[in-house]
Length: 417
Image 1 (cartoon, rainbow, N blue to C red):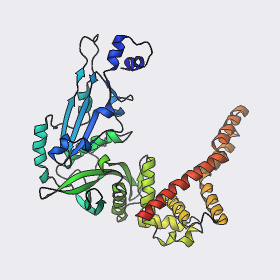
Image 2: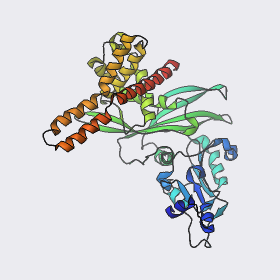
Image 3: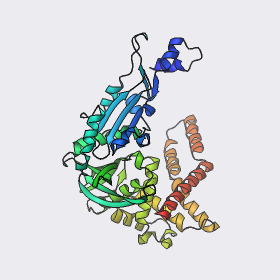
Image 4: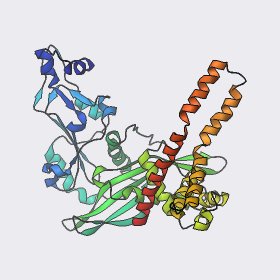
C-alpha cells in the first residue's frame, strides 16, 4: 500500500499505476455514521456525519485501497445503539491487477464493533420499532433543557450514572465506545472488569408517535484511584459528546454534574483528568470558574490580594478542586476583577501571572546549578543556550497573551451562562 501511495503522486506514472491510484479512498470520507430515530433518517443525508480520525483502524494514511466509491455504513439506533454495518462500493480490484488485493475493510471494522450487528436494512428497521422499550441505564443525576431554535421549543436532557451491574449496560457500552475510535485521536478501550470505573451518560428525551424515547448524546468514563490512607482521586479518562450534539453546552453540563456528584463524597480528595486536550482544559476552566465564583475566598477584594492558601483549602474541601486548577480559576477571576485599562492594576496582574509562568525556568536554573559541578564546559554551554532559547522574554509575553485570550473567552461564556 505504501508503494502505491508513493507512486500515485510521481510524475511518470505507468498506466497500471494510474489505474491502481483510482482505487484509493479516504476512510474519513468513506465511513458514514448515523444516529437513527425514524426510518426516513436512513435516506436523509443531513443525518449523516463522518469521523474526524480513522488512523487507529486504517493506519496513519487513513486510506483504504482496492475500491472505487467505497461507503462504510455504520448506522446506530439513537438510543440503544443497535448497529447496522454494511459496505458498498461501485468497483473493486480483481485478479487482472497483477495479484493486487483489496484491503479487508470488513475485518478491520469487525475488530472494533461488537458482534450482533445487522447487515441488512430490514432487520435494522425492525429493531428501530422496538426502540420505545429502551430506557437509560443507572441513576438519574441531573435534568436540564436547551432551547432549540429550529424546533422552536426547549428540549430536555438527562444525565445518568451507570455501572456494569446495570442489566444490558455492558453490551450498550461496547457499542458506545466504538465512537471513540472516530473522534478521539489516541483512543483505547477500557478494562470493564475493573470495578473502579464509573460511567456517566447523557440522553435526550424526544417524542415519537406519542411515546417518550431517549437518544444517546455522549458520555464520560471516570477511574477512581486509591489515595492513601482512605481517599479516592477520580480521574476523567474519556469524554465524548457525539457530533450531532456538539456546541450545545452538553459537555459543560456533563462535567459540572460529575463534579457535583463527587463533591458530595467525603472520601474524594480531588478530581483530575488523564492527558486532557486543549478543548477539555477550556471546558474545565469554564466549569470550575462557574463553581468557584460564589465562594467568599474569590471575592474581588481577596482576588486583588493575590493567590492564597485559603483559596486552595476552600476549593479543595468544598469543590474537590486541586491546587493547580484552583490557581487557574484564581487567574481567570482576578482578570475579571482587574481594570486592565488601569496601568497599576494591569501591571500587578501581569507580574502575578508571569511569576507563575516563569516557574519552570527557575526550576531549570536550579538544575543547572547542580550540573555545573559535573558537566564539561561545552556541555554546560549547550544547556545555557537551550535555556536562553526556551525562555526568552518574547516567549513569556506570548504565553501570557495567549492565556489572557483564553481566560477572556471563559469569562465571555460565563457572562452568557
